[in-house]
Length: 178
Image (cartoon, rainbow, N blue to C red; front, side, top):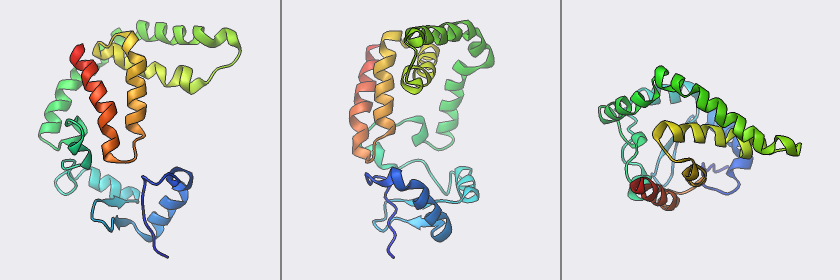
């Protein structure tokens, strides 16, 4: 049997458990026949690779042809420098200072559907709460959160690098305006 690992295939998600089991058992290090990437499927290998940035670089991703660089497209020392800058906004004190606001956001989201007797817990609460909190942490106006959440969903579900261009471009526009 010829095995092809193609996470961009529309039927991939439905068969992902079977595919990953096959990878772990038969192809723990799978090389894309087109030479585009390698896939590691065993935990120990993935852990080792994630800690060895010199051998498994984050630079050179195909998405870089379509979007501006993000933190996850850099290796140390640049990634470390950017992470140090961003982590200042997520100190325990900064997050603790938002506790009352987070409670207020959570209660407000619940109030929007509690009287109806039913809700889509993911769409109406679980996906929105962290987005709204992150929005507050970075100074995003509440009215921009919904569009940013949608852009994130589109970006996270893209199946080919070029699909990252549209949501990324719109996100850049929003943040340039702010």
